[in-house]
Image (tube, rainbow, N blue to C red; front, side, top):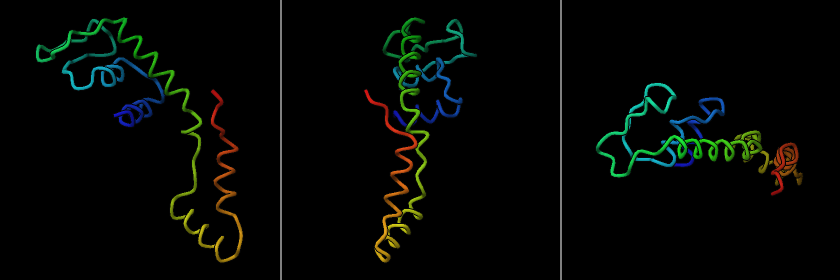
Length: 116
Protein backbone atom coordinates (compact mmCIF):
# COMPACT_ATOMS: atom_id res chain seq x y z
CA UNK A 1 0.00 0.00 0.00
CA UNK A 2 2.84 2.41 0.84
CA UNK A 3 4.26 2.15 -2.71
CA UNK A 4 0.82 2.90 -4.15
CA UNK A 5 0.59 6.11 -2.09
CA UNK A 6 4.18 7.03 -3.05
CA UNK A 7 3.31 6.57 -6.73
CA UNK A 8 0.21 8.73 -6.32
CA UNK A 9 2.30 11.45 -4.68
CA UNK A 10 4.91 11.18 -7.45
CA UNK A 11 2.12 11.69 -9.98
CA UNK A 12 1.30 15.04 -8.34
CA UNK A 13 4.93 16.24 -8.37
CA UNK A 14 5.41 15.53 -4.68
CA UNK A 15 2.43 17.53 -3.45
CA UNK A 16 0.43 15.66 -0.82
CA UNK A 17 -3.27 16.43 -0.59
CA UNK A 18 -6.49 15.33 1.10
CA UNK A 19 -6.95 12.40 -1.27
CA UNK A 20 -3.51 10.97 -0.45
CA UNK A 21 -4.24 11.26 3.27
CA UNK A 22 -7.63 9.58 2.93
CA UNK A 23 -6.17 6.76 0.85
CA UNK A 24 -3.32 6.28 3.31
CA UNK A 25 -4.91 6.43 6.75
CA UNK A 26 -8.52 5.64 5.85
CA UNK A 27 -7.82 3.03 3.17
CA UNK A 28 -10.88 0.97 2.28
CA UNK A 29 -13.40 3.60 3.26
CA UNK A 30 -15.87 5.03 0.78
CA UNK A 31 -16.25 8.71 0.16
CA UNK A 32 -16.63 11.25 -2.60
CA UNK A 33 -14.99 14.62 -2.91
CA UNK A 34 -15.21 17.50 -5.34
CA UNK A 35 -11.90 19.34 -5.21
CA UNK A 36 -9.48 19.51 -2.28
CA UNK A 37 -11.85 21.20 0.14
CA UNK A 38 -12.94 19.45 3.35
CA UNK A 39 -16.46 20.85 3.06
CA UNK A 40 -16.84 18.90 -0.20
CA UNK A 41 -15.93 15.55 1.43
CA UNK A 42 -19.00 13.33 1.56
CA UNK A 43 -18.45 10.37 3.90
CA UNK A 44 -20.63 7.50 2.73
CA UNK A 45 -22.92 5.57 5.07
CA UNK A 46 -21.23 2.26 4.28
CA UNK A 47 -18.14 3.29 6.29
CA UNK A 48 -17.96 1.71 9.71
CA UNK A 49 -15.68 4.40 11.07
CA UNK A 50 -16.67 8.02 11.59
CA UNK A 51 -15.73 10.75 9.14
CA UNK A 52 -12.28 12.12 10.01
CA UNK A 53 -12.06 15.75 11.05
CA UNK A 54 -10.27 18.30 8.89
CA UNK A 55 -7.59 18.44 11.58
CA UNK A 56 -7.03 14.65 11.44
CA UNK A 57 -6.68 14.81 7.66
CA UNK A 58 -4.30 17.78 7.89
CA UNK A 59 -2.11 15.84 10.35
CA UNK A 60 -1.95 12.91 7.92
CA UNK A 61 -1.14 15.24 5.00
CA UNK A 62 1.73 16.73 7.03
CA UNK A 63 3.01 13.28 8.01
CA UNK A 64 2.92 11.98 4.42
CA UNK A 65 4.60 15.12 3.05
CA UNK A 66 7.42 14.87 5.61
CA UNK A 67 7.91 11.18 4.90
CA UNK A 68 7.94 11.79 1.14
CA UNK A 69 10.47 14.63 1.41
CA UNK A 70 12.73 12.63 3.73
CA UNK A 71 13.20 10.02 0.99
CA UNK A 72 14.28 12.38 -1.81
CA UNK A 73 17.69 10.70 -1.91
CA UNK A 74 15.96 7.43 -2.89
CA UNK A 75 14.23 9.07 -5.83
CA UNK A 76 17.53 10.65 -6.91
CA UNK A 77 19.42 7.34 -6.85
CA UNK A 78 19.11 6.06 -10.39
CA UNK A 79 21.18 2.94 -10.85
CA UNK A 80 22.08 1.36 -14.18
CA UNK A 81 19.43 -1.06 -15.45
CA UNK A 82 19.60 -4.66 -14.28
CA UNK A 83 20.81 -5.68 -17.74
CA UNK A 84 23.64 -3.15 -17.62
CA UNK A 85 24.60 -4.22 -14.09
CA UNK A 86 24.69 -7.90 -15.04
CA UNK A 87 26.80 -7.05 -18.09
CA UNK A 88 29.22 -5.08 -15.92
CA UNK A 89 29.41 -7.95 -13.43
CA UNK A 90 30.15 -10.42 -16.23
CA UNK A 91 32.93 -8.30 -17.70
CA UNK A 92 34.32 -7.56 -14.24
CA UNK A 93 34.69 -11.29 -13.70
CA UNK A 94 36.25 -11.86 -17.14
CA UNK A 95 38.62 -8.87 -16.98
CA UNK A 96 39.25 -8.78 -13.22
CA UNK A 97 37.87 -5.24 -12.93
CA UNK A 98 35.40 -3.64 -10.53
CA UNK A 99 33.41 -1.36 -12.83
CA UNK A 100 30.08 -2.63 -11.52
CA UNK A 101 30.96 -1.81 -7.91
CA UNK A 102 32.31 1.58 -9.02
CA UNK A 103 29.06 2.40 -10.85
CA UNK A 104 26.90 1.52 -7.85
CA UNK A 105 29.23 3.31 -5.41
CA UNK A 106 29.18 6.48 -7.53
CA UNK A 107 25.37 6.63 -7.44
CA UNK A 108 25.42 6.13 -3.67
CA UNK A 109 28.14 8.74 -3.09
CA UNK A 110 26.40 11.28 -5.36
CA UNK A 111 23.12 10.79 -3.45
CA UNK A 112 23.98 9.70 0.10
CA UNK A 113 21.42 8.51 2.60
CA UNK A 114 20.92 11.28 5.18
CA UNK A 115 22.13 10.60 8.68
CA UNK A 116 19.32 10.44 11.22
